[in-house]
Amino acid sequence: MVENTLGLEIIEVVEQAAIASARWMGKGEKNTADQVAVEAMRERMNRIYMRGRIVIGEGERDEAPMLYIGEEVGICTREDAKAYCNPDELVEIDIAVDPCEGTNLVAYGQPGSMAVLAISEKGGLFAAPDFYMKKLAAPPAAKGKVDINKSATENLKILAECLDRSIEELVVVVMKRDRHNELIKEIRNAGARVALISDGDVSAAISCGFAGTNIHALMGIGAAPEGVISAAAMRCLGGHFQGQLIYDPDAVKTPESEKWTKEGNIKRLKEMGITDPDKVYDAHELASGETVLFAACGITSGNLMQGVRFFHGGARTQSLVISSQSKTARFVDTIHMAENPKYVQLR
Ligand code: VTB
Image 1: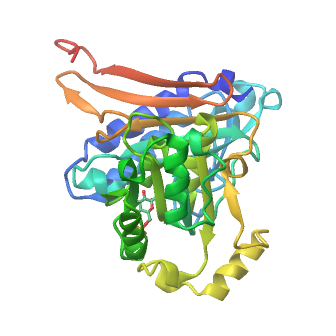
Image 2: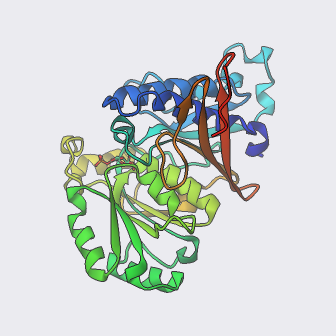
């Protein structure tokens, strides 16, 4: 019963991160936009009555001072916790966070960035390594029918059938990267239309879960940790999500991946207990917990949520909270009031 213990509080966690980050929107400083979101998220999270552990965060302990993998968060993880709560009575929960998903989008004032997290009971979220991941997201109607092992052309045919429309009426989101050049060509040749994004594939993946966004699939390679967060949302929404870890640096060719070797990556995976590096994970494997909660708050406006809007005396945010338990997707619209505002703006 993860949900009851957290209530509305995780909404505030993503809201606070989004507001902090949005102050840096358009300033060209992606690291600051990220850093302030991390600090705000951590600060609010540590005021929640819970025993939480970060399973997907800002990185390993030695490289990330805050929200590192393994960091304990919540009032009931404090050393003096006994004064506040009975830690033994509380369910331990695992948390995957991305306080500023799409840092470039924030830095350059582009749409689609958000503060985001997923929660489940201990062991309920796949602790994805800091690898790339090949992803396929599609609407609920295509769940289990499209398949990441099939070609894009085949999947588009299946998708068109499932959605009862022509391939020409499909929109596929792909991140604009050289590694996707062939994929983009293939999608276009099959007749579908491609919406290229510079960053932010979490928003794109989740958009597939809702009809009316005019996004029918996400294809291509992004980061693995964010793949788990997308999977958590899609698991709750009943949408299709598959992910496959990318261990061959030649498949991505980014400055980061140039530091890796294929053999080294396979070894790293083995050390983490992943013996089949080619395994395809579905949403239920990436977010396997009995209860899964997902929360996001728009930093800049996107398909799903409006971004943070500041006005005299406060700010307005829009968040999305999805629960596998109550089977709800709630859009939460919040006015955040400063001390003694002259007025509280309605719109
Ligand atoms: C980012 C980011 C995405 O993947 O680009 C990243 O914008 C990794 O790709 O939203 P690159 O290293 O090629 O930039 C995501 O973070 C999430 O999957």
